[in-house]
Image (cartoon, rainbow, N blue to C red):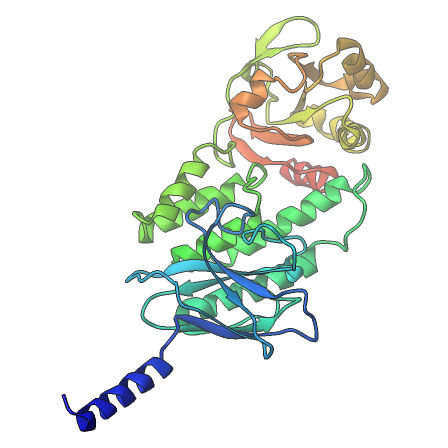
Length: 388
């Protein structure tokens, strides 16, 4: 080959190489900080690993240059949409897949959707990677990601009180606020059919994967995704989780044999109220439970027992003396009580697939669950409305 033909070929090669298109690029505004020299690209690999620390698989890393620019070239080629996570870590952090979730607006990671060959461009700030994110490319999917981020932050700031010390007087209010946040987070998405967006929202409901208090959200998500993406691995994983969760509204409470305080063992259906029963799960050592006894259950019993209300207390106690002393001291001896007196090793809790107290189930005269985990004034008003 002559020199006159070689030169144009070299020129074309140089132009081609110089215009190489990276699958993921962007800019991180550092605001003068040098705490964050590196970005990491993480594959969640499963639903459980999504938004969870130390669970995702590291794919690649990138240096943030002096102007805040970065680029990745190891995004796997895929014809299907996939969700990946971009993380930023401080100098000295040993785990590139460590994810910060509390509070959400200071998260150090950003989920995004990629489908080759369309590149993605991300812009944000080092100190607020999630909050300040802008994502271009794979437009429809990533527009939904950004929309979900904004909704999550707005809901969190509106429903969750400023961080304060948890104590016996505010525990139930904080639990109620958390439930409101979780419920609104998912209910706004029930018309969205994207499995990746629904999975991300569900994981943000509880990054730790604890859905004991909100099993209905997982079960509803499973039902919705089974209609649109039944074969997607995350749909299958979400539905598997739903099978291990507690009972929800409309289910039958199990006709469980209850070891009563008087020494008898009685199946619970034999002692249900003629109209309504509150099955209260508590313990003598549980301060919020004791407050519930005195401030809510006692006046509720006095007001509605003659109208058909029954209360059955089941205690997660291990000592009979402490249990019965608490019943008497709280004025809770008005209603029925049971306990296996095995502490946390409770056959009833195992059957119900629960671990936390205070908790309750409100059932009708046939044992059908009407609602659950209402406390304080909310419980009293619900019962009052039922008997109205």
